Image (cartoon, helix red, strand yellow):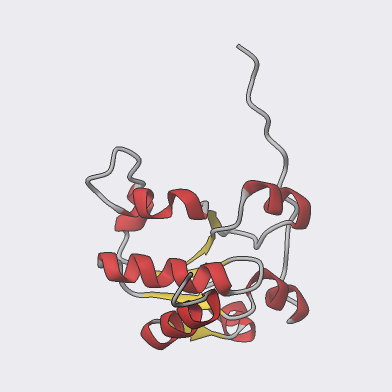
Length: 136
């Protein structure tokens, strides 16, 4: 039996990290010191599109990409910029932002309501082209 559900985990994460409204992120997205990070699965990006200029960092690899000692480290996370994480509805991104914040990445926040809230607020979107691996 679990002792804490996803609702409680997300509420705790939002107490620990900054939560931004989609309308605010729309204004921040052009700031060169801000990086939007789409943590959705690639199939979600192919299906729904993404935010122009957002970096894709799938949730399953995020901590590995952030950790400089990981063989999967991505230098993008060493920039010192502010990272705003988002997912489809704002739950995964709350947990993701909390996790990397606890690792020491700063400053981080997440977008309440995720990509759905972005679209509803009139934020620009682009289609994500499908890139399939080349046959060997």
